[in-house]
Each structure stands twice: as C-alpha cells, then as structure tokens.
Amino acid sequence: MSEPRLVPRRAVRHARAALGLTWRAAPAGTAADLVFAVLAGLTPVLVAGLTKLLLDRLTGGGPTGVPLTVLGAGLALAAALGTVLPHLRTYVAAERSRAVSRLVRRRLYDAVQRLIGLVRLEDPEFQDRLQAAQQTGHLGPTQLTGNAFGAVQSVLAMAGFLGVLLVLNPLIGVLVLVAALPTLWMQLRLNRARAAMVLRLEHFQRRDLFFAQLLVGVPAAKEVRLFGLGRFFGDRMLDELHAMHRVEQRLDRREVRAQAVLGLLGAAVAGIGVVYTVSVALAGGLTPGDVVIYLAAVPGVQGALGSLVGQLGAIHQALLLFEHYDQVAHVEPDLPMPATPRPVPPLTEGIELRDVWFRYSPQHPWVLRGVDLYLPAGSTTALVGLNGAGKSTLVKLLCRFYDPERGSIRWDGIDLRELDPAALRERLGAVFQDFMPYDLSAAENIALGDLSARDDPERLRAAARHAGIDDALTALPRGYDTLLTRIFFDGPDRDDPQAGVVLSGGQWQRVALARGFLRADRDLLILDEPSSGLDAEAEHDLHRRLGELRRGRTSLLISHRLNAVRDADAIVVLADGRVVERGDHGQLLAAAGGYARLFTLQARGYREDAPAPV
Image (cartoon, rainbow, N blue to C red; front, side, top):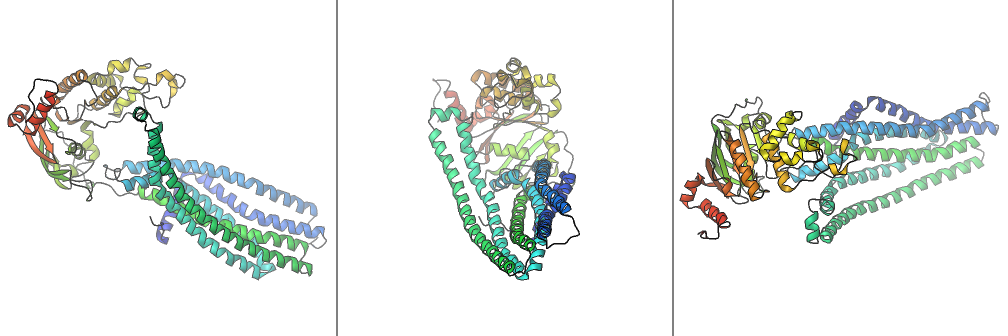
C-alpha cells in the first residue's frame, strides 16, 4: 500500500473541518488552550531576558533603573508560570479530547446509519476504513488542534530566541534556521509513513482480534477444547502479531536512523554557537548576561524549531488520520434514494420479482440468474433449495439491503427503488437465520423487534407466548428483566452473578422469533429457517404456532426441512440462482422432480421402510 498524500486543497478542507469540530465540541476549552499556548511560547523568552538583566546587574554591567528585587520577583513569577502552564494545557486538552470524542463518535455512527443497505458494510475495504475511523477518528481533530496550538507556542518561542540570535550574530541565526530544513522534510515523511501504517496494520489487527476472540470467547470454547485447537489458533494469532510488529519495526528503525542524523546535525550547529560565544566573551565582546541568553537562545531556537517541525509533522499525521473519518462521515449512499419517494401502500395484490439478476460485485459470480417469482398477498409462499441456491440473497433484496443488478422487485406494482426504504421496512417483519443474541435483558431482546413495545410488558409477553418462550423467561431469576449474558452485570444485577443467564441455542432462537412476532401484523413476514435450532417436538409446536400466525397473512417461509413447508400455499424451488419448480406440495410430489427427491430423502430418515429416492 502506497503512503497516503494530502494535496493542499484537501488538507485545507480537512483542517477546517477538524478545527470546526473541535470548536463546536469545546469552544471555551479551545479558546483557553490557545491563550495558554501563547503564554507558554512567550514565557521561556521572558525567563531568559530576565535572567540576562539580573545577571548583568549582579556583575555591574546592566541598567540601574529596575531594582534587583523586582527582577528577581519577575523571574520567579515567569518561572512559576512556565511550570503551571503545561499542566493547565494538559487538563484543558483532556477535556477537549473527551468532548471531541463524543461528537465525532456520534457523527461517525450517524453516517453509518444513513447507509440504506449492506453494500458498504459488507465491503472489506470500507470495513478497514470504518475500523480506522472508529479507532483514530477523534484523534484527528484533537491532535490537529493541540498541535496547531503547540505550533503557535513554538513559533512565539522561536521568534523570541531567534531575535536574540540575529541581534548578537546573524550568521548563527541563519545557520540554525537552515539546519532545521532537513528536520522538517524528514519529519513529514516519517509521519506520512506512520499514518499509512495505521491503515496497513488494520488487516493484521482484525485477524489478530478474530483469533484472540476464538481463544477467550464463549461461542468457540467447546470446539476449541474438544478438538485441541488452542495451540493452532494461538499460533495463528502470534503470526498476525509478528506480522504487525515487523511492519512497526521497519518504521521504527527508519525513524531511529533519521533522528540520529538530525540529532548530530543539531549538535554540530549548537557546538559551533557555543564555541563562537565563548570566544567572543573571552575577547570582551559580550557581557555575562549576553553569554547566558546566547547559550539559552541557541538550544531554545533549536528546541522550538524541533518542536515546530514535530508539531507540523503531527498536524500532517492528524490530517491523514482525520481523512479516514472524513471518508466514512461523507460516504456516498450505497443505494439510490428517489428524490420524492412514493408512499408505501398496504400490500393488497402481492410482491413480484421480474427477471431479477444479482451478484455482490463484478468480481463475484451471479447469485440470482433471472428469477421470476410472485408472492400473492394473504398467502404463504415457501422457498426451498440447497445451500448456495440464493435464498438468503433473495431475502436481502426483499428487505432492500441490496438492489438487483438487472430486473426489478415490485410492491403492488411499484418498484422498491421508488419507495423510502425505512417506510418499506416498517411494513416488514422478519426472523433471520443468522439472528443476533444481544447482551441485554430478556425484555429488551424482544423489544428490539419494535422499540415502541419497550414499555408494554403485555405485548412483549404475548410475542414470547407465540414463540413458546414465555414460561422459560418468566422462570428466570429476575423474569423478563434478567440479563441474558454473563459478560457484565448492570443495575440491580451488579452484585448478583446468578441474575445473568445464558440461554440454550433453541431458547435463543425462540427469543429471536418473539422479536419477529412483535411485527407479525406487518404486510410481509419473512421467516428464514425459523426452526433450525429446535428439536423435533419443539419444531412441530413452533410450526403449529406459525401456521396460526400466518393464516390470512402474506409470508415467505424458508426452510431446509421440507416437512415444515408442506402446508404452504405455494412452494418454490430455487437452484443455481433460478426458479426450477413451483406448485403446492402435492403438485411437486406428483412432478417427481428435485423437490420430490429431497422430500423422499428426508422422509426416509424417519421411515426405515421408505424406498430410496431415485
């Protein structure tokens, strides 16, 4: 991956945006920090000047208008100010960083939520950008502001000390300035390389985190121990860690070499200045105070220059880090939105897929190849097929997480692309095969299906009863308020470890079903493998409940267990991205095609005397 570069126009835009975020997040703290930075820049020059005046008075060579006590008191106050200001700046910077972090995090996640579908979220490159933005997005504005104010401090200190050098000896002043140019150039290159490394390491970090979670997480714990996978995954994790360290080490060595050369150059310039100053003083050309301020000015200018170069490099790095956030915050919509969306009418006729073709990218194969399908309103359509046939992809298209590459999907004759996706999804209910178990209470896990039910316990319990999980949830230590996790405890559960409960796989599936049943009154109910984790008795009970719930409603039922779909009004068989059979259970058996073969194969597992499928 090549090192990122910022063109001036983009750098200015990023700087304005980052500084604007900082000001909006913490205006008072930002203004105070600027004042403190100005004072911090002037204080070293003031201390050096007062020291010169005091030393010259003590040796009898200074002006007599200012009493020694006043000079001493001024020096003490300036020194005290120089001691206190860094702490004040640290405190203000920490407060500003927290405020910026909150604002940036909110805007970042708002931007992600504005994405209509899954196109960006399932893109690995965007995921890398998103991960980098989450980790470093708040650092861009914070570091930029802090380093910009640090640059102001360095410029003021450098200007003061440089003025002293130019007055005493212009040649030394020019030499010090020229020596800083290689430092500036090298620091900018190093910071650009380090910013590039942040994005490059994201690939390794994600894999490292993946293997680490396998080793310490609960979901994989049984297989890891049973199959003896600990050393295997541990070695994989260490491989990723070593790869990260090798990238970091290469850059660290590069920095060490560069800093060594630059340090020697600075030492040579400082040595020349010291030798020259001492020789002139021995010849009587400088007072003791002049020598002191001169000796303070040379390292002062070098220190301020070094700090300024570092601040400029850090500003460049902050802008590069901010670019990750900026690209996510201003990401283009992943799906087109109509300028004036049509209202989503209640489904009265049906949903039609017309010659739908879809693939996840031009580099991927076609998943759906000219699918024609009609889901009549008020009836249940079952979709069956082998793994990889395109069933889950079809569900994503119905929810408008993606758009077809060719063809269209129509809601009562209206193309889904003409509708507001949020309004469309309000008319959908779904239970996904890869449902999400949330580390929340049982009530919250169900209420996530429709947040308007959060304060309606009876509605939550009714959904749980439909899913056959009400009795199990009621029997938990705190009933529906029990946390369904042992990862952390909250509120009243903090001191009661027994209150956190981990459900079985089948119970979790019923909780997910209850979540979907909160939306059972919607126009289309999608049930994607709703009973895959249940035993035979529980599956029979669930499909009895689903049959009652689906009666008279529009629903799409997806299942590998063909016995669960035999009572559907229509059964559609999908193979290799195409509809190859359709009809009801009896018609498909009579056709003696792929459906009949699969049904007979599954039935034979329960009846030893059943004939083998042909």
